[in-house]
Image (cartoon, rainbow, N blue to C red):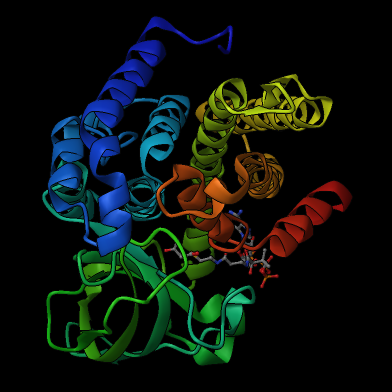
Amino acid sequence: MFPALTEDQLAIQEAAREFATAEIEPGAMARDHSAEFPKAIIGQLGEMGFMGMMVPEVYGGSGVDALSYILALEQISYADASVAVTMSVNNSVACAPIAAFGTEAQKQKYLKPLASGAVLGGFMLTEPDAGSDAAALKCRATKVDGGWKLNGAKAWITNGGVGRYFVTMAITHPELGKKGISAFVLDADQPGVIMSKPEEKMGLRSSKTVMVTLEDAFVADDDMLGQPGDGLKVAFGGLDGGRIGIAAQALGIMQRALDESIQYAKTRHSFGKPIGEHQAIQTYLAEMHAKVEASRLLIYKAAMLKDAGKPCTLEAATAKLFSTESAVWVCDRAVQIFGGYGYSREYVVERLYRDVRVTTVYEGTSEIQRMVIARGLTK
Ligand code: CAA
């Protein structure tokens, strides 16, 4: 237990834990196998105020701090990381940029439905040829009467096909290079937004990820987020918070892998005693525990800096790098401890091993986090 949590933060953590245990965990394995989107659960999370946790109450959110959000997300991820990423993307990279950069009218129009869970949101930055090098995006916004028409392709879009409002980056002024990229809130409920079939993913199988083709997709002038040219600021600012969220998702997954491993080590016997009494397994468990605890502190620190209104780019990248790399290692060791059973779809560690793998990739690869950290250290 982290010593400095307030009563309110502990209450949110407990509410998330109870809901995750009672409502999310029981169907997680079946949803992983069927790839069924957890629509009802997302609706319930909306009713609980978990879909727009940091959105001010006046716009329909819960108005809580980033640390409370992280505490809740970890608990949800512990039960089902697919639900966690759906929640994280809606909170961190859909609601948060709108709350930070939106006009009063945009906040009224978009945050209320997004925060209530009535409508899901997402983030369209990545393109087939522009992932880590986000500024290389090609999606073009062309000025038309009353707004802009967007043309291009977006890739790996979480909540695509199940969401409606997407924070979307496109080039409005090609002659200005990186400063010619602008951000919009795109309503996907129009014929010019064409979603592919969901990707067949290794893990997070019940979350939805699609490719998107934009063919004269319309956004009104009033749907631009921030000023013309603010696109990368909106995107990268949102990703600071997003990366703390993905780090918390990884934390939930690895805490689960550790807890499952401890239980198994106590009950599985070899050479006449529980395997947890063998030094080889004890070494694994101890290192797993150390990585979980260290990750938790880095994540909470980044969230607390965000709550204090201080820059947290370096800390968010550090938390994401360390936590996600640790989580991949912890889940790998969990499979090792479970032996053959760890390779079976009947056991949860097999799902954790698949679910965790993308956390070092999305919302900025580990290589990009190292770049962000090094830039922060040397600037
Ligand atoms: N907050 C606010 N603004 C920021 C910022 C931050 N953390 N980082 C940079 N900016 C601003 C800069 O100040 C700059 O603006 P000015 O010129 O006005 O100062 C502008 O953004 C461009 O910054 P850079 O010149 O530093 O940009 P770059 O091209 O060198 O790229 C990078 C930097 C860190 C490598 C960046 O491209 C990056 O983070 N890449 C990874 C992208 C990523 O994480 N993609 C994941 C997409 S989401 C996803 O995974 C799918 C999902 O749905 C889950």
